[in-house]
Length: 303
Image (cartoon, rainbow, N blue to C red; front, side, top):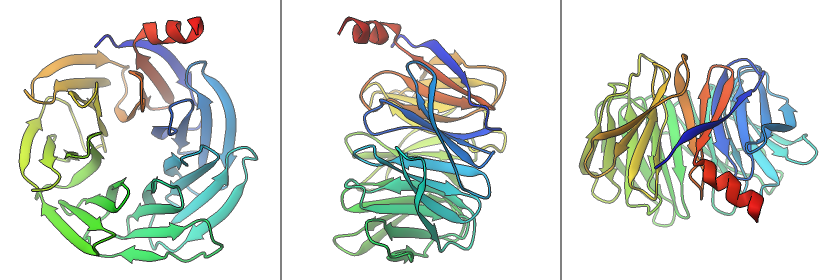
């Protein structure tokens, strides 16, 4: 796995709170403390559009399956549904009693799912003009920190130390308690396992069906920050940001650290693996960093 620094982009939007690829990895989003979302071409570093309309910091964003819409989550307690090409808000959804921390689309991008500091997960039908949430899950006892949304499941992590899996089709809830505040959650591409980043500086690999703890990964620094993790290299490697300005890579099966990438001097807190390629986005302070295999860019030029 030959990862090198390819590009550094100064986002010029205060502190970058999150970086996210769109569905096919052709563009990316940066969420800023300046209340804006920016749309970039990560291969060239070109700024394509700026979306302004939130009244507080933007914490998360997601692109729709056909890349024509964006949803964003802000500490102003609102979710905004944006038209990518015009840069204008299509709908502003208010219903949370606290700042919104995370946002995802379902597979058809017909429902937006948000998690909030008010301890709830809300589902919004964005194809209709209905401004109220169509469903609200209130089972968590603390802030919702991350969401995984699949065809028939909504999985949430919370600072209350639990992972909750809502099976929409069966109308069932399964709760797995880890007992340590969970700050981020991702799912393996095969859907078999969940990766939970925890505030005690341990990343835990959990079996999706049984809730069994399969492995633990340590060696990164958390220092009270929310540090995101990801799964790369076709579900064979785990990667996490770290408070000392690095990203750590572990072997998924063996749990051993295999690589330490020096990203910069500031905390590397958000990251996004490319949906199909080897590139990875990292956020540190005001910058978006693109790392990856340099040969991939050369192949694109040849094509």
